[in-house]
Image (cartoon, rainbow, N blue to C red):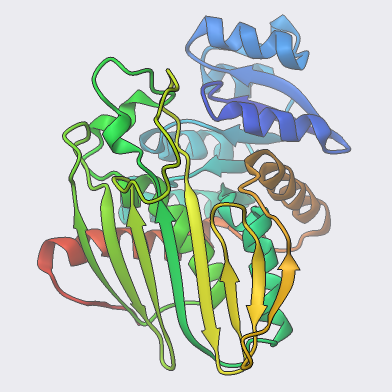
Length: 347
């Protein structure tokens, strides 16, 4: 039985806790958070004894009987927390964004290596239903040699973040590095999962909405030896709106389209319902998936099941700390390219 101690019982912790509850041979043994109210709410909901609730990670590591520390806190807290957990000999799952800089990310990875513990980044986007389906198609070889990949991510998100609106994550409005830091880690991890490591990157980005500080619209070109990709990312577009926005809480309503052209066939994913089809040289469509969805809760179940399986078998994590350094390299390269208006090349 793997005993989990989760630190950070805020907004996204619900996805983690629901998944842990479903995975065989796992128990939620302890919770940690500075907010007593949030701590008590989650303890009641998930049946964690009140004597296993802690206000600091140090106290939880000292007193709780746990094997795993699941860190669901802001990125600036990750380095000290991973160091504490690693020094205590605990296996670690750490939420994205992994770290606010490459230097801190590398220090986190090094602390885990020195302590001899396993470290995985909680990167759930590659585990979403449509991404898994696209991966299966690419691996089948039916597309042939890939020529161009186009990814379009859309929402009318930041324009709805008007002062006074209820935001599940209000800190987003003040982030100077916003779209790529918060969501780019998802996009780049998914891109690497599907297509491997790019050779170069060029980014144009802007901040359009007066409601946020950081960038909320961008285009990225990713170059490979024999094909290229484009990511068109926009949180100020009305193109997916079907009616007035009336909800009192401003949540994201991301719509994602994908088109991958190969020399034998084209894959097309329709963003509004996630339908995935193949188009051959005669224009015939073959349905691969009638519908798919951005199933975040199920993606966490798949991700956390993978974490437990790898702990039991010794297999490598798909999104180990070392692997996530490559994702962060692309994320921070986006800001470098934005600022310099230059292509960033990778070894």
